[in-house]
Amino acid sequence: MSTRRTPDGGADAVLVVIPTYNERDNLEPIVRRLFAAVPAANVLVVDDGSPDGTGEVADRLAADDERLHVLHRTEKAGLGAAYVAGFDWALARDYDAIIEMDADGSHSPEDLPRLIGMIGPDGTGADVVLGSRYVTGGRTVNWPWYRALLSRGANTYSKLALGVSINDITSGFRVYRREVLETVRLHDVASQGYCFQVDLAWRAVEAGFVVVEAPITFVEREIGNSKMDAEVVREALVRVTKWGLRRRGHQATEALRSLRR
Ligand SMILES: Nc1nc2c(ncn2[C@@H]2O[C@H](COP(=O)(O)OP(=O)(O)O[C@H]3O[C@H](CO)[C@@H](O)[C@H](O)[C@@H]3O)[C@@H](O)[C@H]2O)c(=O)[nH]1
Figure 1 (cartoon, rainbow, N blue to C red):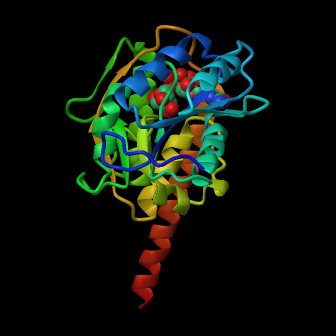
Figure 2 (figure 1 turned 30 degrees about the vertical axis):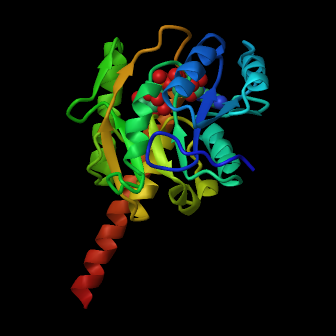
């Protein structure tokens, strides 16, 4: 059981889950920045057997800092599966707020005190805080035009299909109150790629949790490569379409029922 600490933000014990696949040169700088920004946080690196030795870098850092933990998985099984494993690890311990953050520097750890503060007792009453590129004050830096287009398209499509008013539902920088992850039936989540982000945010909305967006600046990585590929896009398209059709089916059934009454 980890020690409960009180970070600068609003929630008590905080865990930042960082999934990694081939992030050897990114990991140490991001972990250092993170502990400088939120010294009381714990970090869990979930590495999928990165061939470039990211797991060994994580182990070396963990040996020097008891706030850092490492979960080694044997093979690359997707972002969604890595996060579910990390969340299971967190829920078996005493964390009140659980955070998703990329390893590559796209997300600024310096934003975390503000994001964490929003879910605390003195915060906005949010259950989930999404770091958003698409609200006033949010932006992207150095993102290739085709990634920006894909991201805008994915968000617009998800918004229309799911009927949610979230602008950046694909964001991978977010804070969950523990109760959200305990409620959303993590083990039913089949999404493996980045549509995991849409899946979880939508589950939180459907379960009645308060999901808010806070502006962030998303900075394109300088080292290494994105793991986004055609399969990630295909999976998101298929799943979001299916959820949207199911939602419309439910709406139609409800409308028919109320006509019969
Ligand atoms: N363990 C593990 N980690 C993974 C895997 N795939 C990706 N990661 C890790 O997940 C993080 C995000 O992956 P990137 O490949 O860098 O993502 P991106 O293309 O920059 O996409 C970002 O923006 C998307 C929204 O536009 C987000 O949906 C996504 O989560 C991410 O924040 C990185 O730390 C990366 O190492 C995997 O299969 N396993």
